[in-house]
Image 1 (cartoon, rainbow, N blue to C red):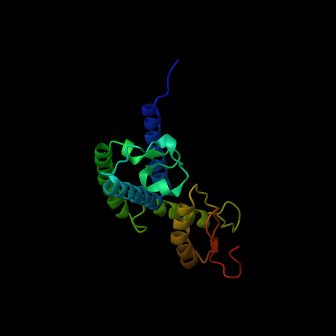
Image 2 (spheres, helix red, strand yellow; image 1 turned 120 degrees about the horizontal axis):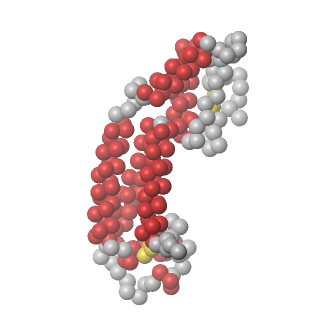
Length: 193
């Protein structure tokens, strides 16, 4: 019989985060950059919280004795699903780890920012596929294409980069439909709804 320890949970979480980042990168460099930026903002928030509360400890405060939903205690707590008192953390080690992660993520963000839509090889490959479909329709004059993606921000990125190109190059209209945000179309006679 095996025991699932906290360190096992943490390693599993690290693996899940790694897979999520790779999925975002696979989706689009744009989505990857957005996710890295979000993680960096969270790290800055945590570093600020550590810096502001690092030397203020309340011996009589115990995680079991406070109402975790009470906003009064927010400045002393970290975590979303699992709340932990800041004073119960090894803040020196945690700050070092966060700073190390921040450095690596900033490098990744800088590298991803170098890939603009004009240098996005995956976007260019998709344009090639679309050109081929338009020039070689499966059935006569069928130029319809549906692109599915798991991420709404990737869908918006593709729409922003493909719709003007398709209209200008081929006089073909485009639409964007996502589960979050507003729908869009380049065909002015149709409402966005």
